[in-house]
Length: 215
Image (cartoon, rainbow, N blue to C red; front, side, top):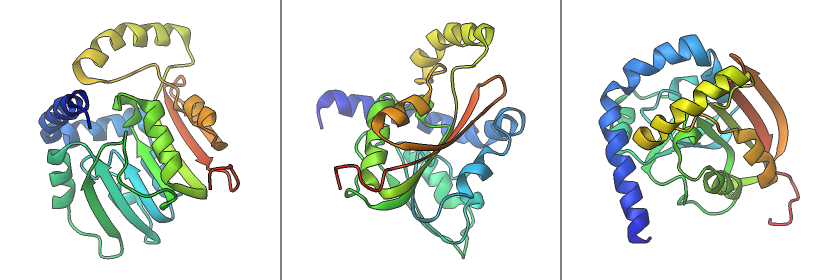
């Protein structure tokens, strides 16, 4: 890894480490008002060997079914510490690792399901992250995403564009991304897309093709 990459990791690790103490207080409001049942929508579809990219403080863990064997990765060691401090679910196997979404430390075709909720907006190179998700999914494996995206309403989109000048610089938070477009361009087969709240929230279910020339 280059020194520039090390600098990037250190900067954003420090940022999210500082945010970790207040994160769990902020998210319930957003879940209730903006994201609704997105955690349930995503996690209830996961099965088998499942990777959660950007597991954060582990807010999704209660929503997984017992047929999941969960591996969660995050760049923030402070957030992972909070996730590890949560009460254990006896019916769920969970492994939490410090890792970078740009270079997942897993072999090709390692997982049946990959999950990422409200994290792609803050991953600097979303194309690289999605390519890594594709790589570690088994052929036929399921990708499940939920995030805030560019609104379908032009006025709201204009406000997002103004806000993004600040949010990207201060917290790496992108407001105008459309993950489904990157997912489709990567070669995934889109199974379902749901958008609501003036198109600000997008949920995606997609599969890596059974035969894609790389397996």
